[in-house]
Image 1 (tube, rainbow, N blue to C red):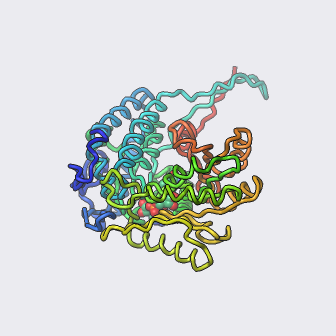
Image 2: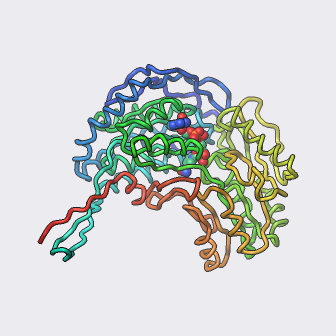
Image 3: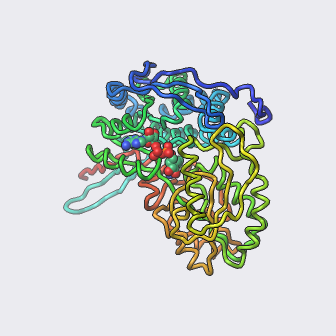
Length: 494
Ligand code: NAD
């Protein structure tokens, strides 16, 4: 399938996975827990009725993962790598099914879904993990002579059973970021997606079978918060890897603490994009605005807190108008669309609530899209808010919608202070023509990723994660692998 096949009348636009089954111990099982309807947020239609796992099925999935663990951990890195590459081959061939499943359940615009959620997730991230499985991480420490001569090695061994629990906004990527590294490390996995977007993961279950992964190595459950609670507090789980909101992240940490299981938490953000005075804002304004509004602003690293040097502020607003003209809100299957719907009506109401409250406390809508919205679907027109104090809720809290805030700053020290003045620390961007100054600012911003001049995205070999309330631990790269590896010191007398 090539990009040229993307049209509003896409042949797969009505396709949704038919399955209602869970994958437990290599077998498809009918769900025995509660059932609920999955909505298409762009049309408000019910696209599937799914069933969640019962408590006994959660136990069965964890037991299956435990049973599969010793044999999977005992495979050589080359063997696990071959399994993961085979899995990636199957996912690549299934792009035609993964794509509509993501577009229909999340409302992600089709071009973004094709690249970010399918191609990048599989070609770049899963393949990287497949190669990482082969790496020998043994560290030879050499000799030590107290209290008598010895030599030492440090070896890495898989942690065990991983519960991987994900949020709704990028169902395939978020899952691959977790299970790619976990499986490569030799762990086995129980995967639980958001109950709002379970379809891509249900399809993944079928594809796991197709790829011939050994039974129990990857298990797929569906369920809501109850299933998440049971899974993260399960005695058979050695590590919980979670992507979602900071509020739920804190609960996960507490639940996992019952068994002293480790956690990796990839949480929300309120990422700053800093525009320094030496920058020609006419060249960057469009890119900046199209980036934070991507996926309807439903991105953890959305750079939606714009800090602009006061000398560039007016020019920046004037240049931003062109970006707002280019924002097309509507049918995610239309290749021209770049802003899809909010996931649910309550989330749409929450996003609009931030805008109303900001205006009530004296904020101004400086730029906004005012074209009529489609009659159906949970769409929100993008807005840029200004004239707000830095302690306003819209400036401090993650909105997770197409709403950004802009604030002027006087000098570099104030920019850094404002950038660091939230509870989060996931990502940031520094726009600056002077590389020395850009680097100085990047080093002082407290965030897990800092891009300079638009930087790039998430490379598979670089760590991703947050300071403060943005999370605990890191995903991706060697740093992500280490989350799934125990460290053992072996010392022998010589
Ligand atoms: P959410 O926190 O509402 O839900 C995430 C998952 O947690 C869901 O599967 C849900 O069923 C489950 N859950 C809820 N209560 C639970 C409990 N007590 N125990 C166990 N599981 C429970 O998040 P969301 O709205 O689906 O996703 C959006 C959030 O995710 C945003 O805050 C966003 O920034 C964040 N996010 C972070 C990253 C990152 O890499 N840092 C990436 C994507 C999204």
